[in-house]
Amino acid sequence: MTDVEVRTTSRGRRIGGWMALGVGVVVIGIVGSLMSGLGAWSEREALDPESPAPLGTRALAEILRDHGVDVIVARDRATASAALAEHEATLVMPDAPALTDAALEELGAAAADLVLIQPRSRDLRLFLDGSSLAGAAPEGAVAPDCDLAEATRSGDVSPGLLLAPGDDSVTACYPAGDGWGLLVHDDGGRRVAAIDAAPLFVNEALAADGNAALAINLMGRHPVVVWYMPALFDTDLETTPTLGELTPPWVSPVIVLLLVAGAAAGIWRGRRFGPLVRERLPVTVRVGETTEGRARLYARAGDAGHAAAQLRGATLRRLARKLAIGPAARPDQIADAAATRTGIDRQTVRGILIDDIPASGAELLSLRTRLRDIEGAVDAALRPERNSR
Image (cartoon, rainbow, N blue to C red; front, top):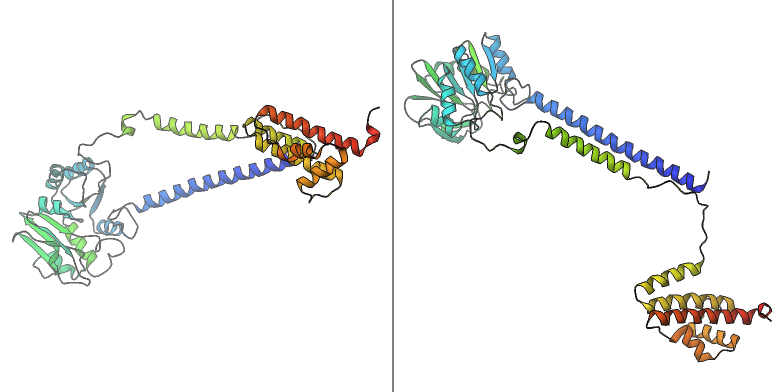
């Protein structure tokens, strides 16, 4: 096997190894993305009744079921409305910013009881008229300090977000700081409650203080709980359609296919063009060819001075070697030695080897011819037996 074949084989192995490594990295990335996506899906969002994560509320949902309360998880407004129409149920609802005020009021009015577990200013304005947010509670558990039986039975809790009641028709419990941890409005048997469930009803906090008892007392007044967790697409707001919604469903798969095909074509065409050429190595190249090639480049660029310097440098090195005066000899010494050996006028030799500067391509060609003549004269003087008779 020649050196070229050996190098080609090793190069192919290196390329194959890098390609295999790249494919492995891509596969690992895809698998990791899928696994992380599955993990995120299993955790879902905070306050989600199907999430076992620390900020989920699956434990509360299971406790309600153990107490005979049917928990229906609705992820869109249509499902929640249908469940409320079919059952006398408590609606448990977090903040739903993708719904309009009218949609929220319509959904809340269909419930027998309403528990706002993530109250915001709009929710308080719509369902607890005049109530507002009042900051965050200091650390530590507080007593109910109200006449609401459900809160009194539950005992102390450590509220998070504080609320301020709008009027005397709203019962406020768990005073802390400048507000209250729980607001309840009872209107002829229909109850609306607002409480920050994030620090109380999630899986990691449910067993503390009276959190579980308070959650069951607020949500378990009816045999059915409709737990509404709005999805991103669940909105009645007027939105501008995206490019993906305007294009047919087959466009995205075709784009992905084209990208994959383009990558494959790039890898395929990225290899070396044409068949491999066998060549014996190493290849010996005369020094003169390199010098003359460089001089031709200077000549094509119109730089006759640099081209002449290249030709003269090569000629002087060869003359120094032929005249045996050493590589350290100066150009003037080489020129004097060549003139002495050949018998040519010293000034003429110096002009050819040192002084004359060509100003055009024609003068450069003339200089090249004279340099060859000087070198030929030195060869003839050193080997008189080769002279023709």
